[in-house]
Structures are given as C-alpha cells and as structure tokens.
Amino acid sequence: MRQLRELTDVDDPAWPVLQEGFVNSSVPVEVLPGDPGQGRACLLQLQVGARSALGALVLHSGGLVVDHGWVRVLAGAPSGAAGLPGLARVNRYDGLRWPGRQRESQSLDLSRGIAVYPFLWSKEAQADPAATTRTPVPLTELLALSGEFCRQMGLGDPGFLGSLPSEGRA
Image (cartoon, rainbow, N blue to C red; front, side, top):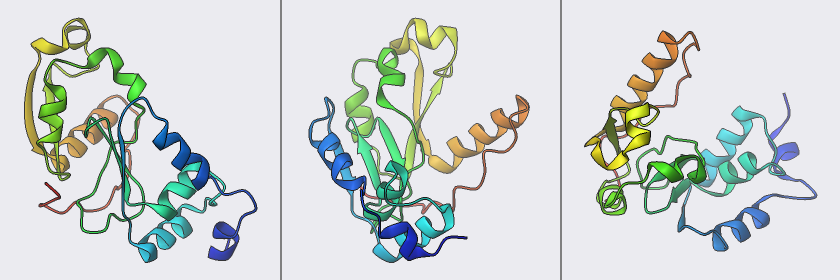
C-alpha cells in the first residue's frame, strides 16, 4: 500500500489540466469545494496518485456539477454539500436531453436525482426522451435501483458509495 506522500507529491499533477478542461468545456462545470482531510483519506483509500485525473479530482475537489446538474460526479468529500454519485460523461447522454431538462436538474438539491421512466437506456426513452415520465427522488433510491439492475444482469453489486445526507445544497 502506497503512502499518502507518494500519492500527492507527483512531478506532473493532473489538476491544472483538469482545471483548464473545466474552463474550456462546452458545458458549464461547477467544481465543488472539498474537505482537504477527506480528500486525502479518499485518495489513500483509492490508491491512485494526483497524476491521474481521478486522483486529482478526489484530492482537490468535493465533486463536479456538470451541465447545470445534468451530470453529478462524486470526488472527495464535498464541503457542506450532499454526496454526488454518477460518474458519467456528458456526451454519453447527448441524445437523451429533453426540453426543460436544465430547469429540472437545476431545481434539485444535490441529494436528489431524476428517476426517468421508461429508463434512459430503453429504446422508448432513446426514441423520445421528452415523452418520458420524470420524478425527483432521493439519490439513495436511484443508487439502490442501479444496484438491483446490476445484480439482476449478473454484473454484481456496484459497491458501496457511502451514505448520502438527506439534505443537500439547493
């Protein structure tokens, strides 16, 4: 097991490159402040260095709110904000954006997500995302549903993402 200093003291840290990417992104990216102690603890647990994008993100932030909350990325521990599951890339969901989605996602605090039915991965949702039914729900429900789908498809449990506070940043 590598020591914290080996993970943080690197010649070529990824954080400056990530920051440049956030600034030059075609969609808005909000970098949430993190708790430095929690970030170091998470980095140590993951055993990835600050040279990697994941390591830099965990060490220097609490997470990301991308494209007005459409994508939420958990990093280190957000300072004063609820947890942010959902490691995904925005371009994966380009075709699944419906009119008004920014308003819907912006109105949620960070402890909630949008349950979509039919599910976004279904043919029906991909054919007409605007025709889906969408309901704000606690992220714990979405995580439990995701875990259940993984188990049903034989993918195993996606793992523990930590406890999510019931109240988040508005």
